[in-house]
Length: 250
Image 1 (spheres, one colour):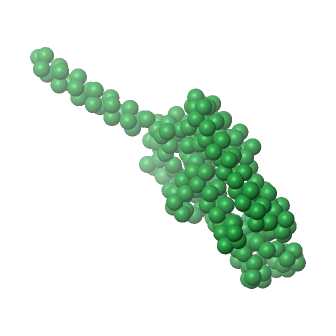
Image 2 (cartoon, one colour):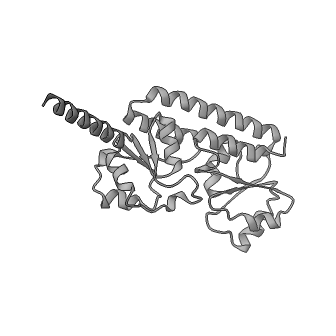
Image 3 (cartoon, rainbow, N blue to C red):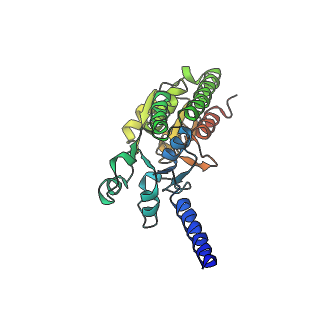
């Protein structure tokens, strides 16, 4: 009898541990970008709904297999522009205190605010502060490299979704294009700026016609969502984008 009881207790302990492992996801993030914010905030266990390799992560649609992860998570981090937001808010009866809405951009003040918001929920403020310092240092280093080349004093055309990063690099756009493809009149107006650099958005590039008119100008595709080109974190994207802007101009 004691032997049977011991076996039962042993199996219950395994089941309990397995359940804890299944339910151990701390944060479910809608995209790689919100996941990057959660990781910067200090979340050690982050599950991402939209695959990293997706070019348009915000268009990801909820799948049946996602439900268990969402229900078992401690926090769900989203930005508000994702296709699945309405499902998260109305279709799954998720508690409001589990949902954390953040702003996503490469403006440092917005990064800091969003990262600290998540960290406050997780109790990981000290880790967040350390990671934020790295992010700020990378932005300042990138800005110094851009200024060394002189792009901060030259006309640059910037995609709407890359304007926050451009500003952090000290670049004031001579004109902003997108997110919709520019019309012929807009293209001709932008050509008049005599821009030396075109910064397009890798996730929804529409600056091709502009680069065809300004053929001898540098044309660069920058990231917002980590995932492409072995990027995973906010810091990775900053490094990648800085290199894109400065490569071939040092």
